[in-house]
Image (cartoon, rainbow, N blue to C red; front, side):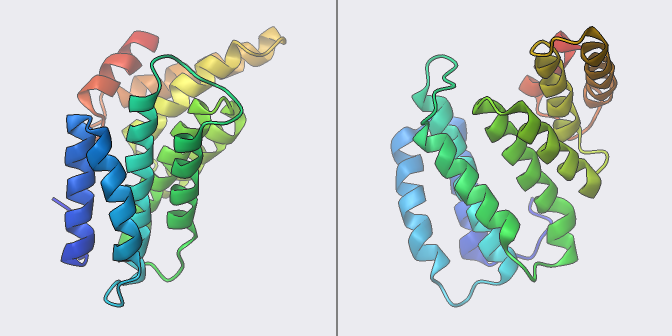
Length: 196
């Protein structure tokens, strides 16, 4: 159930993106991305609606990226991930959204941006976006879990052992919180438990 009062077109679009993502249906996701362009030119949309549709388009591109890659691909060009970042940044840039939108969805937008940058091999940007999400919603379990795994992975890239240890402590703290958080997806909880 969506806690915001969204235009039924925007809300329905979000439900269809979620359903297509759950079904892992590439062709439906692509058609929804195309449909979003028509939805976004509607005069009946509020800033919340527009930001939400861009957020959903970002999620669609994120699902397309996941379906398109059979193995980790940190190549310099990854079109679906790039389009995910663009859509999520558009969502984050919409001004005049309500306080309720800012509290609920902007934290999710930043969390998903963190995930996208992590998938692009940019751990420092990812960590910053997860921290931005936590400034808005400090108990957001998904952002905290992703910050934990991202910090752990980043610690392996550092030469200085004291810096590695600091990041591992952050990782443990965030992962410990996230495994008990209510908003964590069951599949993500398993990953967080594994790395904890």
